[in-house]
Image (cartoon, rainbow, N blue to C red; front, side, top):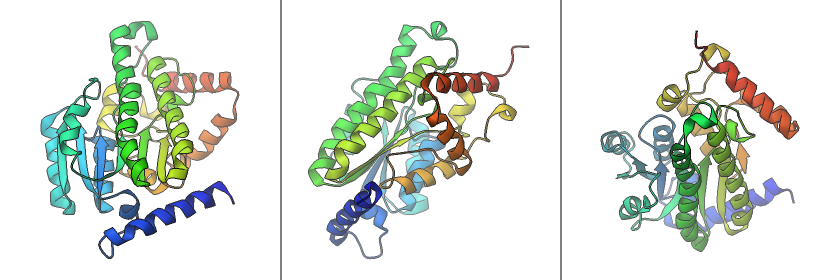
Length: 292
């Protein structure tokens, strides 16, 4: 039996075992990944789009971010627009004790889906970033996903169902000059997703690593002084990405959103490692606005 067939069969078994606890007419997505989801990094852009898409599929949502005002507004909109329950958690994913801000709103509910969308980044030469800021990126992009997968993964494995999405980046496919620590930490996130997919898929847990393309979010515009005309592909909308990612959960180990991106990603993946790094570095350099 092919891997895709095995994973589909396992997914159908999980759905069947949980359907009795789900109201008639509820979508199968909720049967696999409900009743509650957690979206980390959800105050705007892609995280907000993930939260809205999860709510649209019938899941209650816990949204988490650093800024109290925006994240409370996102939760209120989910309740108003979709009629689901929504809770907000104010926390900093760069803090080693961020779970202390998350557990009060998640310990009393059944979390079936976790979407890790938080990210730390720096654009520029490696030596310009400094050790402290680089360590902040490691805390957000490496330590926090480990903490989330450990915390929520334990209860998911015990239940025998659930899903985790780790939002990586195309820069994590290989080292990218100008994004040294960012690309290294995003590579870690993608590799973690691959490993957990293989460890947990036979136990009913779907783990998906996302090779993020350029996405037109407020954070993308703030972080990257890019020339839109030099991007290999137009930046995708957050809503498009959220739908494609959650549609792929349970069917793929790793994916890159955007049909127009698939061929380029396939070609990049087939290159020798040094050619991957040089291609990504050259592409990134070409998108940066000149100093003049």
